[in-house]
Length: 156
Image 1 (cartoon, rainbow, N blue to C red):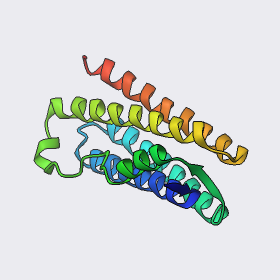
Image 2: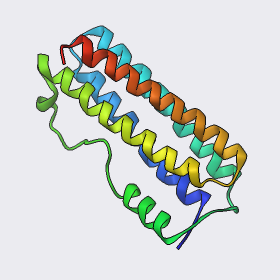
Image 3: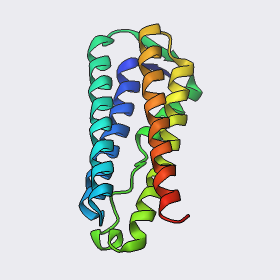
Image 4: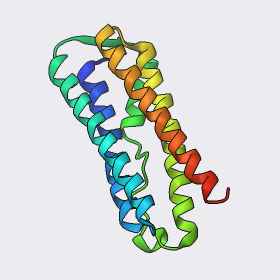
């Protein structure tokens, strides 16, 4: 199986779209304005990442990207897996301890994002794509650090 950039960038767009939805939902159920602000900022950053991957999709329409059955299977699984769980009912997000749960859940998803984008980075052929993906990886690592800060401040 050979994947082109379009397929890879669509997977990344899917991941970022899930993140936007997750953080917007988290903002609705956060119990403090400071937490709402953090989730709003994270949604905005994910929106920037989404725009970047859409731009890449447009710019690299016809280029070959990766050639490997293993890579193709891995990326296909990721595309069809919802990283951010939208199936929880809003009631499951309410309550004092739920904000901590949201931060902990978000942290695990951001760690996965770092791993996923690192995989893409390691297999990218274009230096332009590699540079942009590296920037996204660093921003996602920053998201993990934000989660760590709030998890620590909330008592765990």
